[in-house]
Image (cartoon, rainbow, N blue to C red):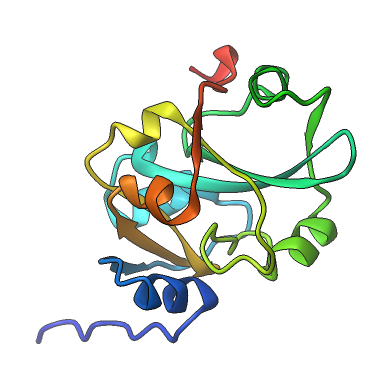
Length: 166
């Protein structure tokens, strides 16, 4: 018997993508607390490098920003701050990230954010043929063309991989 496709209900992210006419594929998986991109990549059978994590960070003035990074890499906040002209960049506390985004940590998508914030994407992400990024719910990724990040979010390319994670 064929496996019945899992229906995923609408999220602010999928609503955003549909309204913008952006093609995407749905990839639900079983969410594992602290499993991260390694777990989603394993379950979906995709390269973790193509799974993009959405990180909510803030500058020295506590102004939020989004950083999109390869799942198998870490962000160098020092390099990022230098490239975006900030004195300092640091991750937001989970409750602050949720307040800015409207999403639970582990289910944060750059699409359908509660308010407009600057988006920065690791340059290497844009060179991939397809990426898997959170669709607005824990246990749910969407597959999209990386150009969508620039075209629909105005994402700016940066080189912010922490050399220790490369």
